[in-house]
Length: 147
Image (cartoon, rainbow, N blue to C red; front, side, top):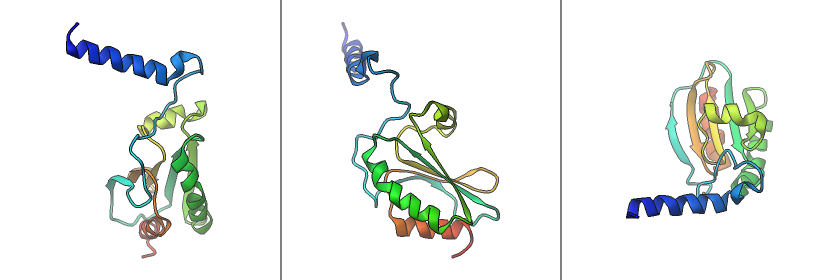
């Protein structure tokens, strides 16, 4: 057996063990990045600097088992309370069967993932991992034209 085939077989065996070999039900839809996330090192994938004319939508993709998600939930709730009249907030549990289509649509592969949409439902910001409340507040204020 060549080295490449051995590596593939080993990876398959590890993934079968990690997923419980099917005994615990379907595998999770999303996986958490094995690198530790910190609130100041959220991975920004792309972002627009322009303010949005219409309503901004903030989407929170989380999982019940995710430790970082549990830490960001109070921050998202604070933002929700503060911007309730200017920003539409939506949260999706990535493991819920009802969320599978939207998880695929936004290609969510790690949690927490936050997606901000403009009034045309186009992605203007997307980041994975924890975040600082003050930074996110400033970002939302910029998108809604307050800064």
